[in-house]
Image (cartoon, rainbow, N blue to C red; front, side):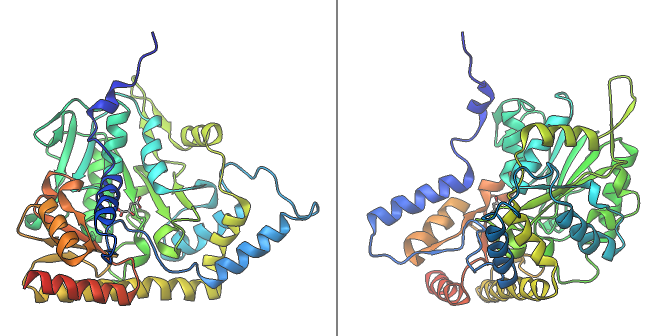
Length: 407
Ligand code: MLT
């Protein structure tokens, strides 16, 4: 008898952003004349940088001639892109990462969940709360958790991020094996200092753990003191895998390109306690199960590192950060506490009411879509997240409507 993967029945009914999309489309169907401004899911709205578009066109033309046509590319990604990434994103900042430690992929969502496959089924996973839902849902689907009870899955070590710890989780009180960290954080927008990140690397080394470091929002960091990569921290290479994405950096949410760094000396252990490098395991997985990112898209991503591309990307990020600054200013003006929006496109707001009630209030009265904080975990109760990804004009209109609704 064919059996289903019953772990799926433990999940919440639908993925957070699908649930929000459904509620918004139901609302739109019932109020066809209502103008809705979406500041919910972090999806970019501005065009790709000119340099990326030019590179994309050129690469598409190459595909139209036998002489320059490309079939399957290297599974790990083209060297022209991996070399640029290694030099600009890591070596230029003193982080020791080489091109052959980089795997090009189609997204951090996939990589940060698929990476679990190279670890034993019995490991203990530590996940921040609130959290980007993918890390948790992927753990549940893989059967790494027990039941969902009182807002929590059994078997997971939840790491609370709240006002008391400035939204940076404390080191786990129990031994854990695999630790998800995300900075600048989604959903809170919090950043981590070099000193605190060092304490996580030290913890991982002492406890023979591995950190999965999601740095998808790194491009939004404005403070020079804030680390952009975990590999800026001494010895992090032994214990950390880092995920990066062109989605928010360069507007690639619909174009798809990201990468994962697995340092050659990052290790895990077998049942006898023997060390094993993770790089060959991820390489094996990637070659077997991933089809690669298309040649034109990798050329477009490469253009991010050209002189003009770098200027255009900076301008793009700056545009969204200006939106975030306005959101912060308006929210603070309403007397509400918030964090984020300075080194991140997300503003995390203490709404002082149930998150879904706040979501409904903003949707029904202001015609503005936000993300309810409780969708990111128990510690998100009472919060909402507002995303800066929209036009400045729409953000200005949305904040004026929110002001009117709340005063
Ligand atoms: C978010 O809104 O949290 C992100 O857009 C989700 C994602 O990047 O998958």
